[in-house]
Image (cartoon, rainbow, N blue to C red; front, top):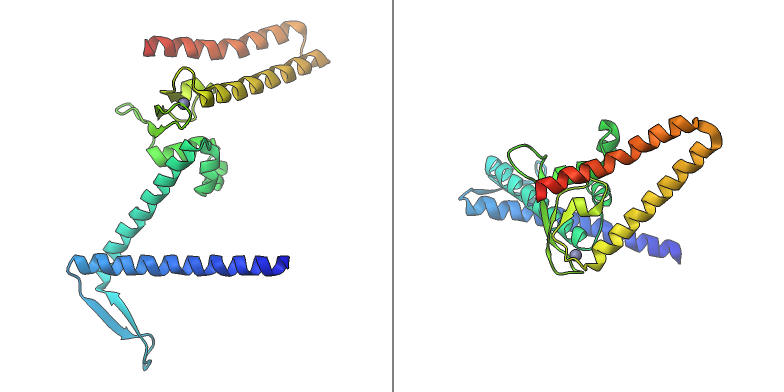
Length: 219
Ligand SMILES: [Zn+2]
């Protein structure tokens, strides 16, 4: 029974994938024809009765680029759906097939995904990705997964937004877990007391300094 289900699922996937190919092919022909390209025919193989129809080849190649960009736009629409649903950039990166790239370059997969979608940040342009938060109804400016604290990465949530509150709580829980792990590690005698104090001070100095810098920028 299970095998049959797997088989029919597999058939449906194969059919849908081949439909996608034919849909793309017919879009290319429509576009090429709209540009005034000639539609041609030739036997599928020499001597064959069945014929294949195609646009003038160079017009077809150009039209296929438009279809490719359209598919990218559809993917972009789905990235927005994902962000609205609260799916993170790391998972989006996995779905975009960027996981291997991330491993190869040593980059954070979430950052690779964000930059693929928005373009890399540069000094001339503040990059940001916009979507509407379903919890508070506000337009969110998603500044990318560069910072640790959710409030540094997403701007625009209402003060009482439940989704932002949940993200902040999850962030705090992770911080607490890391702090506990750190304390357990130093207590095991991996560092002398003086070393632990110095390293701890350094660890805790980093985050608030960034926040302070940001506050000045924003204020
Ligand atoms: Zn919100």
